[in-house]
Amino acid sequence: MAAGVRLQDNHVIVVASDGAWDAVHNIKCYDITNQSTITAKTNVVTGIQYTTGMAVCLSQPDDSIYVAYTRGVTGAEDVKVYYRKSTDGGVTWGAEQPYSFSDAAGNLFRNPRV
Image 1 (cartoon, rainbow, N blue to C red):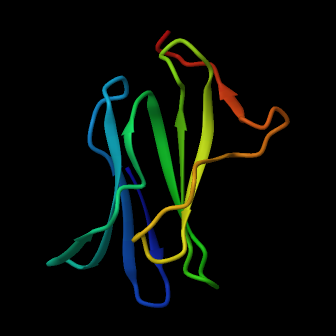
Image 2: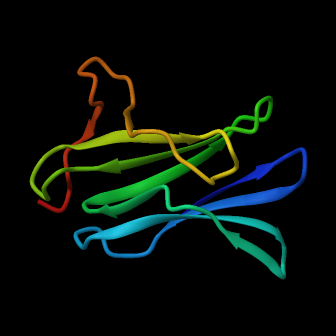
Image 3: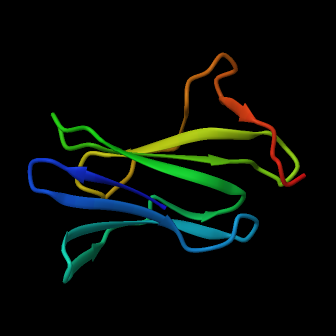
């Protein structure tokens, strides 16, 4: 789970996984206006497996939402960092992009569960 505050309206954007690391699950997105108003947005990712963490970054100048997450294709390979971007408040998400490291897929660390 991760969260960030959008400064222009004080909304909290929260992303969270709805399943275990090795189970097929989703990364969900919520827009929290206040303690009684929580709006579910479109899933950042649906049907993903082997994710180990996530982060949310809000671009204050243009209101874009960036959600980064780590994942492997199988439980035995290196975990890599990817991100998706929304320019419409979480209604739609762009294609998965690798975080840019020297190997383009962004080897970050060896999976500790293997």
